[in-house]
Image (tube, rainbow, N blue to C red; front, side, top):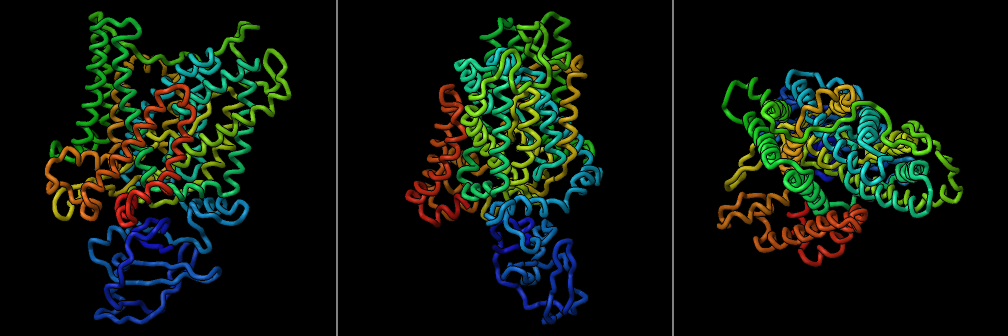
Length: 617
């Protein structure tokens, strides 16, 4: 595979394979890199002397050759428009390195490559958080925003865990699970932009496992210890034998459907939660109406502040503050409004944060809260030996669920569209989950956490700078300019999450509906950059000549393009229906996996290779 500056770090196919634009080469010299020394040989055959060559305007193209030898270097001048692409490149592919999703053919080969690839960036992962005033603002605003997003998700899932497991898992356990997982992941993960948390498929799977324990008369919490240990063992195997390389078969077709589905689920759940204010809980109509106003105003204000950053209102400093802290300002504003209405007798449901850090389950035998550390051999009775091995079967399902959630989310984060400068670490991420998440959650009696797609994408978006690019032939498109990559936000937001129990007296003043507005905001903003939504929005343009001149619009017949979009929408609708049917919701990750063979074997029979090259590149 080619390594070019326009493909950050050279991971993935080259985006630009043009021939050299001049015969300029350089005199004998050697440029030293942290991992490889590359000789640049040749003579200058250009009208300017070698000393005038600007290395910022040179395109470097590396082609790996036989093992053990150095890479071939081709140099040529680039146009000014290409300089920005050149600057996205920071390091060459280390000698002997393989791609992040390539089979190494060796035991631990992919894992070792992940560590070697990621290690040079570990220090700057922390220092980059505060390298400039702009980066400090991004770091702090993203931390504040994601804290509220993660807290509201943890409380929502914690309440449902409690209902489904008779309080053996609850809000306290869910908050603690998210905090521990996030802190561990911040220190050791290969892609610290991913956020771990409770997810819908994990909730459904926990319900199925709980019912199995009830049916076979075994204690739920000790059974989860063994399930977690088996899951950790299987996940270690996946990490050591390069099994994440299977995700190399996932294309944009699957990524677009998955990310669009998760975004729509967030929007749907936010709107459904507002609707339930009128039908569930016995709320007065005035209270439900006020909650509705708070939800949509929180969303609207957050979107307005997001737009202010790109406008001409205020000076650049104030615009930056509004854009970075818009969501936090919205939550605080409408929490204050809800408090003022409370004095007039109109109340809205507030956050229900546990006031003390103690397990949710009260042991009926002792009448006291259970111990934090679960005895895997039983709490109130001996745990049967046969059940230790019986938990292997549900552990296999949990392993696949975690594998799909983790890798699909990482793929979305690491897409070339996002122009990340630092490399991923798919195998390393799985190892961190197997050693630092599953065993700890199992022994402490906490819900298992996985990569949460929308929260992860929202984390990425909150750290991204965008630009409006004019398309050739008319129209504009929003594209990523740069991403503020670092680990501090991941660590800080989960430390705050761990401290949320201490901050409970203040957090219970925040209305739930304000966080419904945040969910709505997260769902809508995560649509940005998804070409599936771009093509769906084309349906609202009646005159085809008015279409924005996207690459696929220029190269694919309109009817064929719409046929491809409709096929994706049908797949997404089927998956969405599955999430609403409890009997099959647990199999949701498995059906996401079926999109890969569907793309490989069915879609090529419906579209030509040229069409797929444009629509599914």
